[in-house]
Amino acid sequence: MELKARHKLAFAVGALGKDIVYMLVASYLLYYYNVVLGVDSAFVGFVMMGARIFDAINDPFMGIVVSKTRTRFGKFRPWIFAGTVMNAVTVYALFAAPGDTDSVFRIWLIVFYLLWGITYTLMDIPFWSMIPAVTRPGKDREQMSSLARSASGIGDALPTVLTMTVVPILSAGTAIADYRIGFKWWGLIIAIVFIVSESICVFLVPEKTIEEGEKSPGIGKMFKSLFSNDQAMVIVFSVILVYTALNITSNLILYFFQFDVGDTDAYSIFVAAVFAVQVLIMLTFPLYRKAVSKFRLFFMGFVIQIAGFVVLLGMSLADIYSTTSWMVLLIPGALVYAGYGILNVLLTIFLSDSVDYGEYKNGVREEAVIFSMQTFTVKLASGIAVAIAGAAIDLIGLNTKTLVQSTETLNGLRFFMTIPAIILLIIGIIVFKKLYKLNDEEMKHIGEGLKRN
Image (cartoon, rainbow, N blue to C red; front, side, top):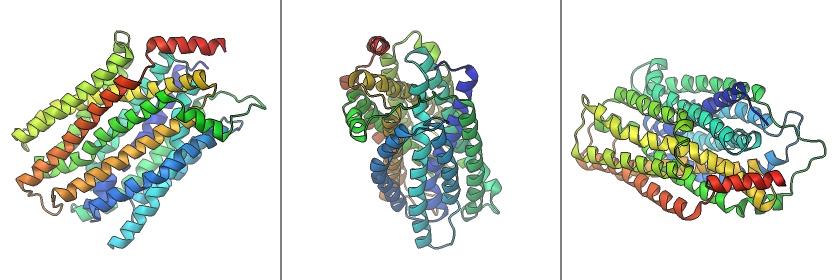
C-alpha cells in the first residue's frame, strides 16, 4: 500500500495524542499520588509494577484478538478508536481521585491504573501495528517511523513542559494540596485532545482491505511464531532497557529540580529545550540515515545517551549549578535526549523489520502480536522505572514536605537519576551487538524473498 503525505501526517497526529496521554501518566502519576495526595511513593511504584504482571498475559492476548479481527473498517482502526475513548475516561479518573483519605486514594489508584493499562493496550497495539502493515521495508517505512516518532516526541514534551505551569493556573490556590483541582481539569483537557487526535488518525489513514474468506493462523501458531522470532525478542529486550533507563530519570527529574536545583519553573524550560532537541533529531533522521547505516546509528545513540548521563552525574557531584546557573544542565540533557531520539526511531524500524523477518522465517505475518510485545515492554519499562524511583525516594529519605534536604539525600537522588540508566544502556549495547542481525543487506535479502513468495 502506497501512503500519501496526508496519510502519514494523520498517523503522526495520532502518535502525538497517544503519547500526550502516556507521558502524563508515566511522568506525573507518581508525583500526583505521592506529593499532592500524600500516598507513599513505594506503594505507588508497587502498584505500577504489579500491573505489569497482568500485562504479561493481557497484551499478547490482545495482539491475537487484533490479528483475528475482521471488519469492513479493517482490523486496526476499530480497536484504536474504541480503546482511545475508554482510555480517555480512565486518564481523567486517575487524576480526579475522590475523597481525602489514604485508603480511598490507594484503592482508586489500583482500580483505575489497572483499567488504564488494559484500555491503553486496546489502542496502542493496533496503532503501531499499522506501520509494518501499510509500509514496505526501506525508505517508506523509515520516513513514516521517523515522522510518527517525532510527533510522539512532541506528545511527550507537551505534558512534561506544560503540566507544572498549567496545573497551578487551573488550581484554586498555590499550595501543593490545591493542585488536586488543577490535575483534575488538566486530565480532562488531555483526555479530550487524545480523542480528537486519534479520531483524525482513524478516519484519515487508510488500511489494507482484508479479502473475504481470508483467515488468520490459529492461536498456537501465532504464539509459536512470536517466540521463535529471535530478532523480535532482541528488540523487545532492547526496548525495555532503553525506555527504563530514560523513565527512571524522567520520574526523578521533577524532584531534582524542586529539591536540588530549587526552581520548578526551570524544570519546564529545561524539558522544553531537551525535548526540542529530541524532536529535531527524529525529524532529521532520514537525512543522516542516508550517510550512516542503521547499526552504526544505533550504537551512536547508545554512546551519546550514556555520555549525557555521565556528564549529568559529574555536574551534580561537582555542584556547579544553582537556581541562577541551572542552564548548564542543558548540556547533558541535550545529549541524553538526542541519543534517545535516535534509539526511539530505530527501535520502531527494527521491530517493524522483525515482522518481515518472522514472515520470511515462519511463513506467518503477525504485526499485532509482535507489536503487542512493544506495548507490554513500554508499560513494563514505565512500571520498573516508577518502582525504582518510588523505592529510591524512600531509600534516600527525601522529605516532600520541606524544600531543605541533606547532602546525603541529594547525592542519593543524583545517583539514582544516572547510574541505573548508564548500567542499563551498557547492557543494551552488549546484547544488541551480540544478537541482532537484521542489517540493511539482510533486510534487502528478506524483501526479495517475500516478493518471490
